[in-house]
Length: 163
Image (cartoon, rainbow, N blue to C red; front, side):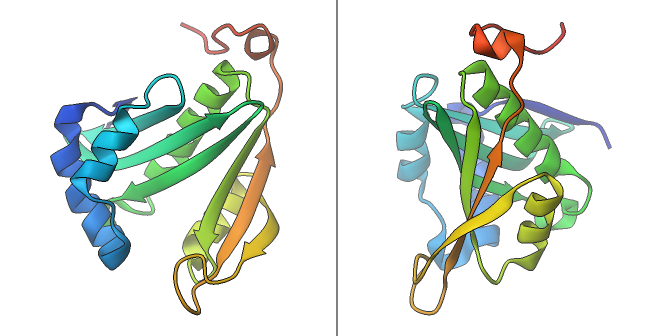
């Protein structure tokens, strides 16, 4: 399957909402929440989608708090999971963070989400804290963090990717 990563646009929101609802249920963001998030792009936030045959199969978002950044959300269609799409999305967010001169990426993940915690650990994220009840009573958030490698281009504000 050929996956393309591109910036999330207003026209992607309806497809994203289906994945959001299936992934997060009662905790799902609304269309208004996504519209609000996209209004902060590109200065404070960056959202991307993963496309397979022009269909959204995943998405992710990042917030810049220089010199740090925070992954706000990552979700992939259930039938497309375990194919590396979430890793592709996270790698792209990290590259964007570096382009914005961020040196660290933070995130929260529900303590019961072993699959996500394992994936983040494989990507170099370390558990650095706990937020009790963050997702509701008895649902804690594990705080994870990763130092990004510094590149000359990122340090100077340039594009660190090859063209």
